[in-house]
Length: 308
Image (cartoon, rainbow, N blue to C red; front, top):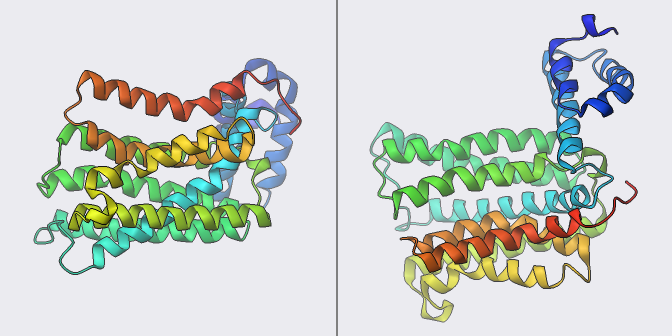
């Protein structure tokens, strides 16, 4: 397949690779694309082109399977899905518990928002089931609509005139958290993704932890439960998990680093509202949280490449 006759999507995907890598491997990547899409429809061809583009971007950013950072992402991806699915279970409990739901449902944006926040957890649970059975292509495909629907929360909240606690902080979180969550799953090297018994055990524990922590926060927010330390204490639980996992990243690098990266979106989502309005001290605390989540990647950058 010559460059002139290459599909446009494939040409763009190949351009995502560094020039030197593309010059050496273009024929191989083109042959892989042709074989994978021989009997595929337009959606299958697009998906394969996106896979090749993702491979190129990972080569450019040092997140390939031969790099420690890419291996950390491969560890983080299933745990990120588990955290998102666990938070989805807590969201469904919040939606259907009488007397707790505070979202407006008397207008079209309010109804759409309720439907959106009910659908997203179900998609993440389906993604978790796909990861559990080793169907990573299905799982990564499901992550895309889950992320897009989660991003739709912000305009729907604004149209429904929902009262944000700190509208700018809430808006930034409603954009940053779903994008970061989706990116952690989609950026992981595809050839390192699988499902083993230890991974299933880690996913189960992580999902259970997510349900527990989000449930504690829900109870703390609604009932100001003294036994849970009140809302401010429960909002810091994810930051505590992040801090603990970082303590183990040196001894058990990949699993602990993967967990630290996976819980970073939840730590941001729960910690940042406590910093509003953002004082200089609060800005410093937020910077610490962000840098803490970046520690595994900073260490990985300093580590020589290992075998894929």
